[in-house]
Image (tube, rainbow, N blue to C red):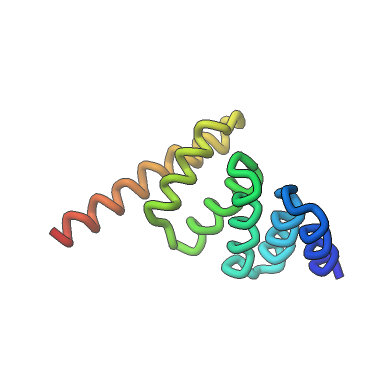
Length: 110
């Protein structure tokens, strides 16, 4: 029922990033991490600076081990917005790890 309520709220308020974020969070908390990603992205499409969605999509991609250049862009955006030291540390570590992975993949390709 909560998922349906968030879907309805998203339809009623097309600019508010919270309804799709909340729907994604509901899925994420139930263990459907991959299924939550489109909702976190929809939230970011509505507000690219919505920090809760940035945190969630990055953490989900890290947990799924599906980081790429897009994730690196999101991490950069999050680092510019984030004020919480714990999250800043997390994002900084992920930026370094993702850059190293991308460099390694680039080296293997060429």
